[in-house]
Amino acid sequence: MSQPINVPNSRGHFGPFGGKFVPETVMSALQELERVYAAARRDRRFRAQLRTLLTQYAGRPTPLYYAARLSKTLGSGIKVYLKREDLLHTGAHKINNTLGQGLLAVRMGKKRLIAETGAGQHGVATATTAALLGLDCEIFMGEEDMRRQALNVVRMRLLGARIHPVTTGTKTLKDATSEAIRDWVTTVRHSHYCIGSVVGPHPYPMLVRDFQSVIGQEARRQILAAEKRLPDFLVACVGGGSNAMGLFYPFRNDERVAFIGVEAGGFGLKPGHHAATLAKGQPGVLHGAFSMLLQDSFGQVCVTESISAGLDYPGVGPEHAYYQLIRRASYVTVQDKEALDAAAFLARTEGILPALEPAHAVAHLRRMPSKIKRGAVIILCLSGRGDKDVETIARHLS
Ligand SMILES: *Cc1c(COP(=O)(O)O)cnc(C)c1O
Image (cartoon, rainbow, N blue to C red):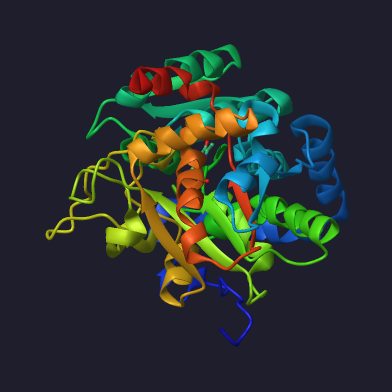
């Protein structure tokens, strides 16, 4: 890497990836969003308003915690810092993005937020933001996910959101996303579609990345204060890729800082057994963008499988596909069982019960010592807490 990374271009392209592949009726809404976002990011009042919500409501800045006992178990003088997004209001990094998009919706005069959700974390964050800003909220969620994440369904309803059960396809996140897009096509005039990760048509991958970049901006400041140097590795789990990109992005031109994204290996790397899009996918179009995608030889989107609903998605953000292409980041996979072990391991060594999504990153961390230099400094994004997964973890460990 020699030239500074500067993507997307004005048409939303990250190298060959990204763009806008949407029905005509949505085009003008995307253009409006681009225009309003461009003005908002230059507007001191908008930025101050978002900063106030992030600090006073969501609980930023989150600590960059030096995990001494965890580091000791790895040996070789390796130091691990955990970026504690799990301590945010609603329990995960999703709120960084929904607060930003909620304020944009208000700025556009839109009174209704719609969103898709898999694990329910993005649905809860969107419903929370809607309640806070006095907006209507409707959430699309696969029936299968509603069953797996019943507690989050109750939380969303308590927050005043209406849930639309999605019964098509595999009744999971990809189908919920298709349904949300279908709704948006007919309601764009008064509805804002609040996408939960760095996916979808331009400008969403850029906009969600920017809102999540607060993770990396803080981490950069915090590690320089703690270690007087930049880290050697950043490690984060990748579903759509927003917590990972939020951490990576502010370090993108620090050539010595290596990025590792960890995908869900499910119960093996055979088709249908995993959600390892970058490891096993092919280029293709899904949900409005050209990116890597799990598809069969006919171009049909594959069924995915992961113990963590938040990683159970056949697509990935176009910026990750680009980082993989130019080798700015590397992507690895971790299977369900390793993630479960890692969750229990982190709970016992540090008293922190992670969500199963970042438990994938913790599992990869445990493999790293044999491959890296002594005394390496690693920042791991702990994207969410494990409360939502306690039942799943308990069931599998018993
Ligand atoms: C949603 C979620 C993820 C996956 O989404 P990304 O966009 O890849 O970050 C990861 N961790 C947690 C805790 C989540 O809720």
